[in-house]
Amino acid sequence: MTVIEYIIGLSGLIASALFIYGLKGMSSPVTAVRGIVIAGWGMAFVVLVSFLGIVNVSDDVRAHLPVNIGLAVLALLIGGLWAGRQGRTVPMTAMPEMVALFNGMGGGSASAVAAVALLRHQESSALHLGVTVAGGLIGCISLTGSVIAWAKLAGHMKNPMRFPGQRPFNALVFVATLALGVMTVVTGMQGAENAGIYSGLFFAGALFFGVCMTMPIGGADMPVVISLYNAFTGLAVGLEGYVMADPALMIAGMVVGSAGTLLTVLMAKAMNRSIANVLFSNFGATSAAAAGPQGEMKSVNADDAATTMRYASSVIIIPGYGLAVAQAQQKLYEMVKLLVAAGVDVKFAIHPVAGRMPGHMNVLLAEAGVPYDMIFDMDDINDSFKTTDVALVIGANDVVNPSARTDKSSPIYGMPILNADQAKQVFVIKRGQGTGYSGVQNPLFFLPNTTMVFGDAQAVLSKMVESLKALGTS
Amino acid sequence: MAITSMTFVIALYIFMLAAFTGYVVISRVPSILHTPLMSGSNFIHGIVVVGALSALFSATTVPEQIIGFVGVLFGAGNVMGGYVVTDRMLAMFKPSAATTTAKNAANQKAAS
Image 1: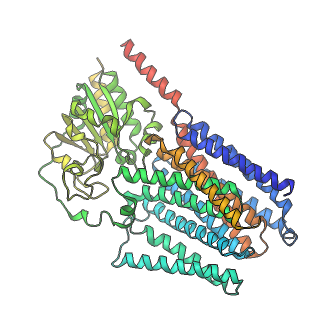
Image 2: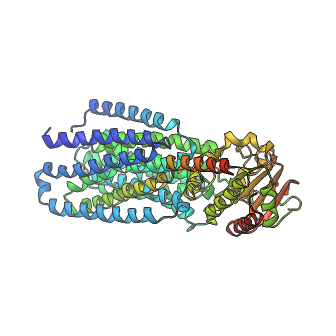
Image 3: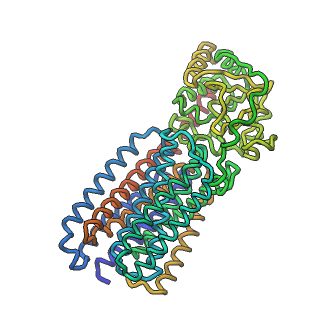
């Protein structure tokens, strides 16, 4: 090994240590910001040091070096500046789809590394080629799958695309892609002329399979899917790290691969679904037609609801994605401050999948300035509903649907829910009479202790703030 | 580095240890941090840009250069985007701000 190789190798070691230390920091709110900054320094360091690699290239590459360095700097600038701009300007509500997009780019990058390694076909042992192809396959699935997930969450693709015989078709695409992958390995080992054709077809097949796999999955399940593809990209990066003989990529990739898998399992668990169920069940396809409205909904205007809350002793607020869509978090916190000033005990109850990703709603509330100690996880607060005067549901639906507890035929049966229905009085702020993201009718809205407040969350909350101000705090 | 069966076995050791590390580091995370954490781990696999860079540096043909360029482009997007987004989210979770707000609320209650 030359000195340069040692420096590059050690930079990867330092970066890996900083990544793990940073990730550990990110797992607690107290050290989270420091965690990402530490990981960031590790990344900046290892990327800069990797430029030393140009000293060591073989002679046949030297002539191309100026062009290659130019291309590298250009790609870093364009990719970095574009993504940095996107990341800084994206609204917090659109965060899940942004993460999906960045994750897809990582998968694309990993499969590009695989493609270059195949094009060069130097060390053509079966093992080496096999790992290259496996990483390329997973990276490609992550790339196109994430793009589809992004399109669905960003609203560019409203309905899940399903057709009869889709599952056998997808299985066929997958098997064909695997076969092409095997052919790529076999022809690559022989150094055959047609190796390029097979690997080209293989990458096309893998990209197409990512699309096929993600198309039939409904928008509500996208967070789980994004998290799964995050783990996929990690795995692909780890495998390509082996191909490039770079332990830093192997470690960082595999750490993310396993952490991402665990996160995916946790998310699926919060929705009471298995990952297989999310990927293959065509959730929501049959439920939309089931269960019409049961009975009449009562409704009340915002002023009366505000007055009731003002003179209640305890209020639990259940925010859902509808709140974020209406951009009403600030207004909500304004109202909460008025209630607290009037001596009402106010808490926020967060369902694990509130928002579009676990923890998404916490981010949105934190953005509006809501302090930590008012926000409670489902397990910590669910027993308190029985003794609570008012439960205020804003833009949430499926996470407070009592049929998840009682109705075995309901598609969301068994999903853990917030027991809003046990509060003495339930107010539901809702735009109209439609169903939730899962397409399931919600019996909560028809309970005797439930009263609807129809209207846009922003408008309703503004009215509530006004009437609370009029009532005063004493 | 020559690829021998020994280096492959060492690679498996690295993978095994890294997988356990990832599992242990994440396993006790409060659910409020799931979204930033997903984004943070998304940033970390952006290290693939280093692999893409070294692939591009040693490119000798135009197809290699094109694919390498795309790889670095995507990898850079993954790194920068992942970092900026995670940092923005985590910055909102400042614990000091939260405790001060809580203290202020307590003071207000005591005053009124």
